[in-house]
Image (cartoon, rainbow, N blue to C red):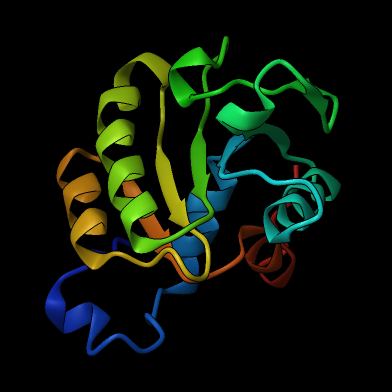
Length: 157
């Protein structure tokens, strides 16, 4: 699998990040269970979660306001630490600040949850958080929808 690091040279001035297809393919191929942080009914996060399910991924919506409710066939945990299974990817919806908090939590979740990938949805880009997560051994993708990339790269489960 190709490697990628969010160095200032690689990410440039805030424009689109030129991820190698092999890197994206590897991130998606190694992912079966996805926790969607910031899941909200009727918003982009729900559409993305449904798209990921359509591509064969197991999706666990995460939102403290919906904790205990049933969405997408899963009981919604209020936080990642409440997920009763391992997860391969955390997909973050929200702001750059949300991405920063998720990166901090993901560094702690890497071991207990077998976490491999931290993915920031469009609007949650945070290059510093990406570098911190990479330093903890996670692969990071930003500003792309994982289901779109899975379809484009022909990765499904």
